[in-house]
Length: 102
Image 1 (tube, one colour):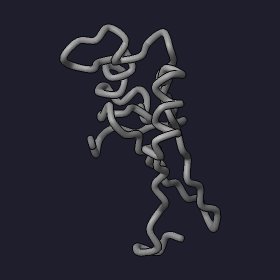
Image 2: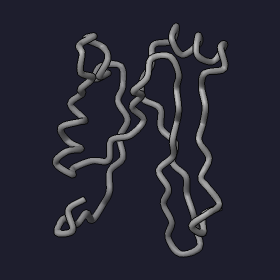
Image 3: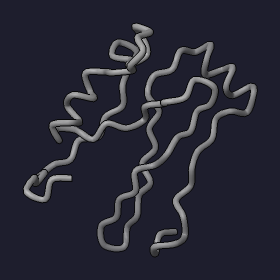
């Protein structure tokens, strides 16, 4: 994180079916959104690194007394997502109670 970088309006993005990092089947899963995220133009989330399970982790935000857990899941082919749901390999992580978060 760059301490000299300031964002007035944060942008959060997940990938869709046309910019899926696994679409081309290369050894390195890379999408155009990865390049935008490296330059701090967007917050890219929802990308899955494992092929045998899906773990959806939230981005935690708070302002005043309001707390928000933003979940995102990038595009996954219907057949694969259905197979993962059927095998109970899809998990949604919950924010922890420690650090004052509920």
